[in-house]
Image (cartoon, rainbow over all chains, first blue to last red; front, side):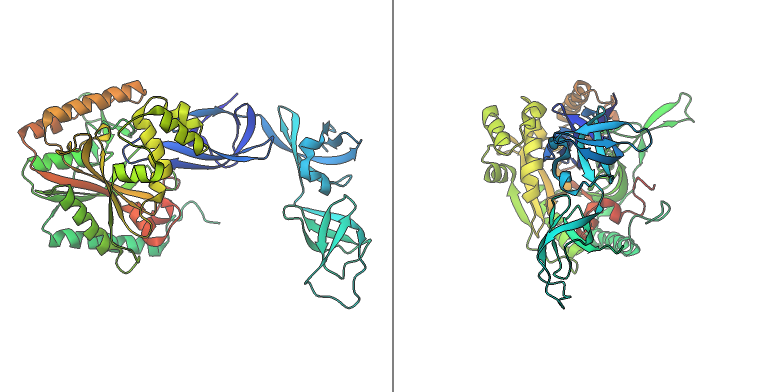
Length: 189
Length: 326
């Protein structure tokens, strides 16, 4: 296992902290003129998603975490687990609800997404930045209203609810930004 | 996307640097302070327990000799003072290994000056004059503030920096969600002071003004003189603006024996923390034995001053080529 010193800490580096895998977000070098140098580090716990700040003495080190992001295809939900597959090796992974987290509302069968593995076990799932989903339920729009203002809630085939413009109808496929949960556009066939 | 051959600073920022350098020279010319140059590469180096240095090998000597890139020009400038130079200033590069970040580049530009016959008060007044002169027309600042270390430390943390009650220091860290401080600092009073000052006090210093903090604990004495009326403190000043440390100055210690003992203590401290060994600068000690005139001196980091002048977020924004492109 590799060891990283504070001066190697950079955004994205995966390390072990308090026995949990974490990702470094920000590393600020703080040195009083004549005193001890510190590194004030902003770090995300990859299990809980929580962001904390931790100070280290410069030169201290942390063990690397065996964390990798793998592109996988979402296969199906068996009720308890969701199943994913790497398209090259056809290796399958099952993720419980905790690992899938909020990604669940954007996952449609066959779609590609990113599964983060820690010691080869799924840690979290990140949907593609943009997904195309079908509206299964929304109020009928007012004919002639083409403005972007206002909007109405629409339920998608994955269960997610997003605000869409009034002119968008039930049964239409729309493109959504999963990072913000915002409607982007209609998808023409 | 920029290419690696391109400067990290804008050309406007480089022009401003040139103007600041010109104004500094004008300021000291008018005050009859002599500009000097001292070696960048020397046979000894500062013993500061928290500094790492660059070394190089000198091949022309009969035996290959390790030389040090200077972490500050202080020792050589003091030897000039002992030799009778009168008041002097220098604008030079200084080198500190392993220091890189938003406010640190391992090679940086320093302004350092010494005024004969000055005490700490005189020095603080001159620092305020110079900084006012350099920032006029660029920053709209309030009058420079002077704060006593003990007062500002207490006002912000409720802790007395001169009385080490570990339970109170630990309680402060825990209340501020920094449990790691307990293992980081342990029973080391100085380390606690560094930790708390840099995390909680410094960020509040110098809002829209320069702030001079003086009266540092004697345990953080370095090359400053012990204060005559309060021997728990030294006549040392630090300059801050917008939470950024700009400089460090002293009413300079003259006593060669005391200075030699402090060097020994620092060298010992380096051994304890496993830092590379340094040798005491015997030539500085000899010069102090000959006699250092009464004086006060200070070093100001010019790159950080330029950051403040240009509202830059990163030191590379004011350097022609930061270490990543050097």
